[in-house]
Image 1 (tube, one colour):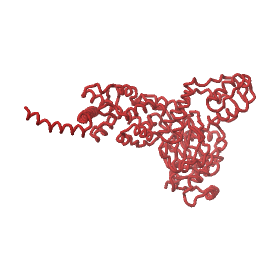
Image 2 (cartoon, rainbow, N blue to C red; image 1 turned 60 degrees about the vertical axis):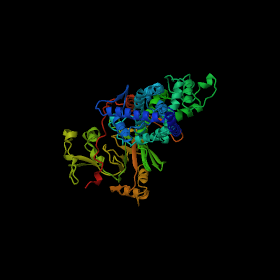
Image 3 (cartoon, rainbow, N blue to C red; image 1 turned 180 degrees about the vertical axis):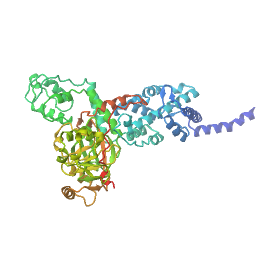
Length: 583
């Protein structure tokens, strides 16, 4: 008995040493972690089935990708330990709660379920149940991170599912690389910040959305009743809500006025109206007419929707816009050229009509053409040119058109006087029309080509008066530019031997000249009905193509919802793209 009792002493000493070396609970932690990994593997094995994969009542959107990801790491968890969810998990759920800051819905990322899940008393559960529930939580947290990260990078909505006139290149989000490196709460916040756009325009839009939410929470702004046009010197009760509206929009300082003073349309109010008109793309005349009144009476809720859909469009853009790039905003009828993030040129533009909308995409410019001829596209011929010919057969000669027998390089000319125009329609037109180069040419003196499936391009125009209009939707999809020579100088800046004098000399000579670019200049065609200016001022524009409501509906839809494209007519394929470089 004694000898047996004595033999326990070395064993007890060994156990005491092991207790000092290993942290408390280490054997149990290892076992629990293995159990969690086995449970993760079981769930991901189930994801191989063809039917949609769910955990509890949550669809796992990235099930296939997660299966591959966890297989590579031996199904080791990221968000949970044997004790329950980590601080990183709690940081992710807190970030999901603020998804609306970016115009995204927390409900798309399992937020409601996850926030309740974190309250679970895991320590009171038996080991098998705890391992299973922590594995479920792990997979759903990773699915939330991947979905949210992808949406921050590329946008929630694929634009081609709602806009046939929109192309975008998907960015590689590297979301799984971020996921693999997460250990702390700070790393979660840093990863999500890196996945979202970091440009001034995007962050300023997020700030404007926050300001509008504050206005909404405080009750919004008063509607200005309809009535006659208000202008400087008028006294009216309607001026009082006008003052309140412009004060809440940060365009008019608050002033303590007696009621008779507040109802006077004074110089300060006129300046505030002018600023409002400028920032809303209205005729800056300082009076509150029909269009200005309609813009003033847009609710903060409506403006917030506009901001949020434009945040989504920001996410569609490439992160790197290019060292030298051109930004064309169809909704604002504006072109801006940038070099090393500095704006060096801006001008007004004319864009497509409602039924020939200017598309949206990004592409490098390839070449420009000085003194181009214009081959009339079939649609333009049918809609606009042929009726004028029928009315006046001399129209062709007066406008420098040539009638050519076919599309071959050396096709013969046809004498228009030999054609019985009363019998001609678009489908039996006797050849093609080509307008000779010159100041009368519909493409003006310069065209800028960047190959794209829509066959749209930039070009000059002889119709200079149209640039004075506020709404400039007059083209068949292409973009007419106000300052073609200045734009050519920017585009050719790094092309040897090309300067303004040489460009002007060739234009004066009249010879058609193709100039290939030797430097990357990226053209971004965008559609922004909201942006923030260089001094922090918000700008809003009319939704000329009715695209905002379509995108808003898609943003609010549950992930995976099948979206229906609205019927649209794409810009007509233009025969003037590449014609000078053929043969």
